[in-house]
Amino acid sequence: MNETIVPHIPVLFDEVIETFKDLKDGYIIDCTLGYGGHSLGILESNPNIKLICNDQDDEALNFSKNRLKEYKDRIIFSKGNFKDVINRYKDKNIVGILADIGVSSLQLDKNERGFGFNSETLDMRMDQNQELSANEIVNEYSQNDLERIFKEYGEVKEYKKVASLIVQNRPFSTAKELADFLSKNMFKGKLHPATLPFQGIRIEVNNELGVLEELFEQIENAEFSNTKVAIISFHSLEDRIVKTIFKKWTMRCICPPHLDRCECGNNHQKGKVLTKKPIIPTAKEIKVNARSRSSKMRVFKFEAKR
Image (tube, rainbow, N blue to C red; front, side, top):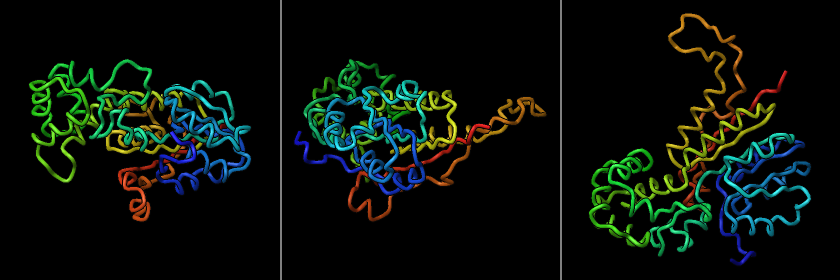
């Protein structure tokens, strides 16, 4: 890849910079570095902030190490799934956490990664060192398991039909072959017929909802003080998890609902949600970067320890 060409436009860039602009020192963890767009903006805007830049994709890490080399003295690069990065660095002065949990444009556009409708592979692994890929899911999963991922992860209305068609007509060797097959056999609405089934497969391949929940568990257990957490999601399943966890962190009482009176001490609130509604891209941003249209950012701030 030509390292002079930036292959990804970061979504909600101005809004991310605004979120962290008041942080004067300490570390911000960029859990999903990608191609360094958000990190570069934070480094330029916050001269005393240091970054922990994490990604599980070697290609993205190598690109960003070169892109951000001017700031190398202020960066710790970390390789691994974002669910593990908090535990690795929780003992540092963490003042901010950013996670952009969407698939990058380069992953979508590169045919060999198997994410796109024209891909000549059936892969979809964000971490290419893991064993499970889309090929195993599409060609080896039982019909019941395919129904589950299309219903729960893809939110496909005709999940039974999609699973049945795939089982009856497999094997499929490429994403293009599968996308073309679904296009011929499924209802054509505003979305390409393969959009939601591909979403379900991709989430299953990468355990996307599971690792998001693990990220939140690590953040909660780290007991951060005065730390901002900004999460950018791209579909309703992710956003629902973010909204639910942030709401949980604002609750003073954590007693079971059947109790008549509070027995927990009514002092469990960890901080406050800074975004009453999710931050969404402007019409101007969507015009420049159509892939930003489904992005949403929610921000939480942990209160200072007393």
